[in-house]
Length: 76
Image (cartoon, rainbow, N blue to C red; front, side, top):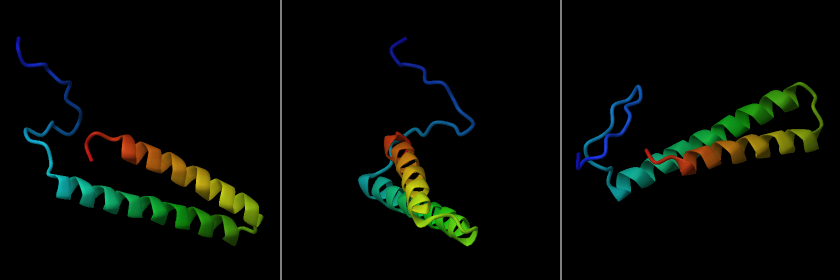
């Protein structure tokens, strides 16, 4: 076997790799989603009367984790 078989996930593998422009655009859109999730978490916490420093800490950690997952993805 000269071709390495890759395991299939729920989404089938693409035959060709995305272009640089498409990959860049997808990362920008996904990064915007990370920012949106951070804003939502911050709004929920501040609405419930949580201390400001704790809101900042939670939003920062959540954003950092989501960004790390996003930028390590080979699909984007």
